[in-house]
Length: 560
Image 1 (cartoon, rainbow, N blue to C red):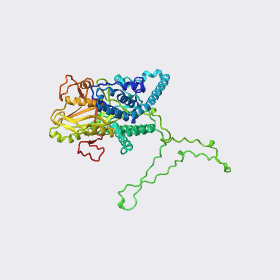
Image 2 (cartoon, helix red, strand yellow):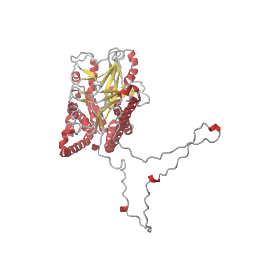
Image 3 (tube, one colour):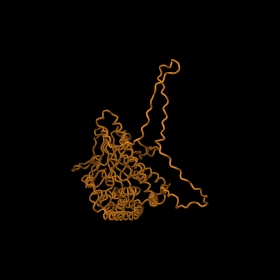
Image 4 (cartoon, rainbow, N blue to C red):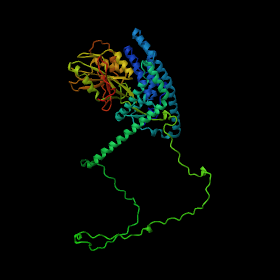
């Protein structure tokens, strides 16, 4: 669908000042541990880098600005900042904040220019078509609730092709996997032996700003080509279904009737041919051929010359001596101009090109939009195979769902198995530094977690709720998958409600591993519908096990 372009729709680009106000509109809760806030800054920076590579400048600016606000202002006010460990961690984070500030400075003039161009275009449109403004908006196309949220969402404020992720799942997965391959290649190209992560970030950022105009033109052209092929494939599929339906006698009554013939159509008239008359002939040859039918005589040659128009007389040609000079170009017929060469010269300005962005598929209870999360359907089965030994012994096990953001949607591409301590009722990750280091090196976001209930049914325990709160603080779309192979339902995909779930859990002071909460509706299902999670057969993923002694093989990305 085309983006809404009125004053309250997502077609109006937000200014840098508007985005900065929205970037600071989050709950600063000192009850959240300092390490969770520090991880949040890393998640924000990684997300911003991904949106920057998608050339979604408004959302990248929001995430960079929020990250800088936390690092430069708020983290120093946290009660745990007084500890030596927290001070060391913040000093290390300050070493990379210059990359964030540099990107903010480069994005701001782009946002200002996009908004100025939009205002100029709107002024011209209003001056010429003021009488058509009300009729151009279709109130039935989208609800006022969606318009209200979309107008405040920087990810949707730029002029992009907005699509529903549920209706275009195959397209979303195909575009994401192409983009992930491109990012993997770029990361390998900038990674050098012994190079610090900060240097890699600076190198990638510098490379982006050197070629971003050309890159956005090429990427959007590729996305549009994939979109076109998807539409053609859908049309062919629908056409094939129609052909099958028409050949099935069971559905003959359901077929639409053929349109009535057009009675006023006049066919062109042609001259009638001369009829041929046959005369019987006596049989010739031996008697053995007596039973053969008589051979007709040769057809009389009919003169059709009367039907052919006369050839016009030749125009006399006056002989003249050949001129030694070439004829004047003004006397020659004018030839059509050659089409322009592709990729010859600077690419078209990004503001005039249409990209692809996927609309939020759900909203939190407080109205905050949730991006779509695509989950490989085979991931649960593969995880249960890895956890089968623990399940047989009655021990829980967990894994981390890691992935990336592409076109305003999230895609799980890695099942990370961390070091962990497992009991019959809990599973606690250990050596979290190695887990975080791997995610930073591979440019992966933590999109949630998965764990087993080998002896219990499928639900979120009080311990699970506190664990999930840590993920949703970093990323609102984070999910928790509970697998209970011995019970029905055998699995569930959940998230905390917000409110009341997330704020209540964050303010909970109870120290016991298992305790009761006197608030209902703390968590809800996240699978679509009405949630934001889609399980997809075509999404690739791989397993990376960082437990001591684990073997990961040589396959980087494998579909199970």
